[in-house]
Amino acid sequence: MNLREQLLHGKRAALFDMDGTLIDSMGIWKDVDIEFLGQRGIPMPEDLQKNIEGMSFSETAQYFKETFSLSETEEELKIIWNQMAYEKYRTVVPMKPGAAEFLCWLKAHGYATAVCTSNSRELIDMIVENKGIKQWIDFVVTACEVNAGKPAPDIYLRAAQELGVEPSECVVFEDIPAGLLAGIRAGMRTCAVEDTYSEYCMDEKRQLADFVIHDFEDLML
Image (cartoon, rainbow, N blue to C red; front, side):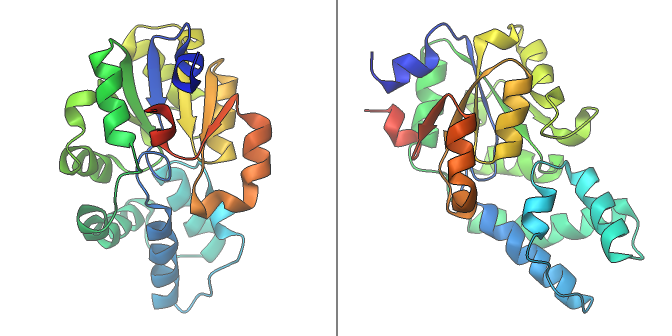
């Protein structure tokens, strides 16, 4: 069996993180965080990105409010971040190589698909439409719509339930350890996707994941 056949053997559904997995966007959020904090005279902590990995949009807003003693409400913070990121996502962020082709292949071969993201509903709906991949995705769920963000398994268990498949019939594609842990805790096969912004934890990703790919072109050979 080739890599794709091994990865999908015995599975009925493929579940995808979005940022850093299907799209090359993790640098956008670092830029947003630097700009947002800089406007308030707050230096960017070196460990900020690691500390908020996997958090839902709401959990991140709560973390920022408590950590940096911000005057804005959590809802106001989410609105500000959506406005800062929207145009960048619409015009700058590319799909990962082979991602669209792999989604198309999955649908053509009868697999169910879902996007399970920590991003906001506003941004994710725009991305799915803007990138022309809506036709190949059966279900989209954000971490704000379940009880807890990654590394809790909630988001992936919700997707499996909505798709009508067992967790053991799913494979999860993720770019960060928190997401891989969410898939593992949901009882699913996991595949780590390499990403520039998570190179620092590549060894941890390799230890956690059942499979590792450079990008989705690896699965289209």
